Length: 176
Length: 455
Image 1 (spheres, rainbow over the protein chains, first blue to last red):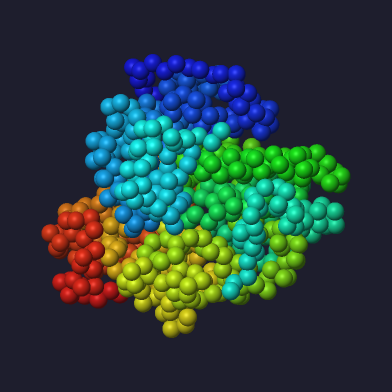
Image 2 (spheres, rainbow over the protein chains, first blue to last red):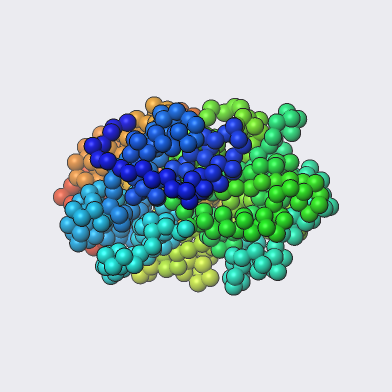
């Protein structure tokens, strides 16, 4: 597991710890590891959407499992980020039904507008464009995920509006 | 108008809430099962219904339930597979988002049948807002006394939780899902032992799809015999179909199994025909993993019979002339779609989603993607088409789980039915420079360049 030379402040607040304890209560007392994925989602959300090695170690400590057990899970699943990412991550579905409805052209449009390539955050860290595999919204293609929510039936106008709304801090990322 | 079982109540305002769901007959199946039926009687009712697993494989649900080991003395579990990730498939999300208590009611009744006291709904992590909807609905069900200790004073206890994944298609495979639920990488397990004997935490476990579990309340309320009257032959009941691609009305539809493909495709009640009225080129009836069919085999089987929306009719003739109902992920392509590009897109998906445990899948899906990419991008060689055929044949049947087959079948079907399109890509690379190369010049118009007809 690569250690990035970027400091991440670890902030397990009382509210977050309460949520972790609630999640742990969903599994038998001797099966704490089962809570790992749900816990990682909440911990990541509370830490700018990425997980440093130090933060993963902290999760291992809370769940009383080995750090390697957290690393192997984080590196397997696509939703966990191992480096800092753009605050507003535009995750375009690039699977066939979305392609049939023109998602590739929309991705190009968004990248051009933001002046980035796929997988690169903007210089101010506000935006990042990513291509992901099927998000299960094929009938509402083309679409993308933004935080906890889906943005569907996308057009260039909708993308323009979303970018403006993000810049104005009007977009809610997480359903709390 | 098809009978509605699952979506019957979705248009009722406020049906997402417990109060409205209950006012509209919700949780009646729990009351009936717990107060007047034994667990085995519920299993028998589901067996009598002929309900087949709606996740894709189509295995009889009641039979799957009857395999669960009730004699081991170990705790038993029901796990709902809500890890909907098959390209083309988005039906389960609709049920969970619009009528979450239907799934919860089904989970309680089904858990009772299995004598399970701890059950889970495993939902894909990307459906985070649906996860929250389910979490809130479960809290409502606890508060109303449908979950927890001594439900309805019957002595039956059940705890139910929703659990989110982390973004991995393979976790839709039942043993990978179990591994993931145990907090591990989603690597499928070798079967046997089957989950019914050794599943979650080595306990007897049944894994069922959302749509299958959501059908159980109706079956218990109305009897399995009534359910079996709907549909055709061994394809009983209704099925959710999620439709996408080049059609006028994409979305989720509930149909009675046995409806003709023609009516589903072209009537205004359903898909409304092709967008922009362009010619139909191909369709995939059951999600990305099932074979694509060309236009001449869509409405009629090879024997000239009407093609129906049923397990049997869609697979008529095997993979030579048929496909599969699968998950009901119905993707439609018009004449501007490039089959090579689409097949490459599917192969990229399977390569990305392979867990990497089996060499034929880990390596083979990568090779399929690589060769398809070069053909699609104008660097293909004549021998590449046979190479693709060879690679897919070495993946199929040689992996622990069905992901290998799912990666191989679309490639095999694309070559089988559209070989001339692959040849066109190889022989005329200058004509496919643009990614939308068939939009202005559909392949039908340039077919004479290849000089062959589609098989």
